[in-house]
Length: 127
Image (tube, rainbow, N blue to C red; front, side, top):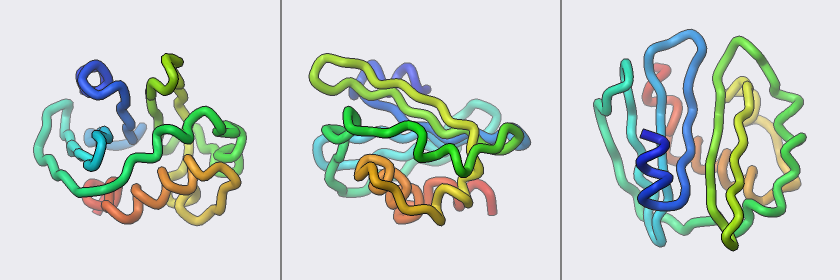
């Protein structure tokens, strides 16, 4: 799913868990975010919201900002984004609840975490 969205939109984001059989994948288009909820690798729901993309801010990311929430046996958040013909790809083993409580210098991370909360990207699956 991540590879398909990346091929179609030049960006894909995901959260997966080391302890559950569900995950969430999402992508941004010019004025939309499309969120896919998966269970056992199959799409069980998809939702689209109007929004503004912030992918142009990916190049300024300090990837160490998530370190305070690192947790090897919890969730993994990742992304793959093309900006200015360069590919940015990162994976972080973190506690999603922890990253949602932090403030970040990187506006990319601030907006990423805001979208996770605003669009209930993880809550829908973990409740």
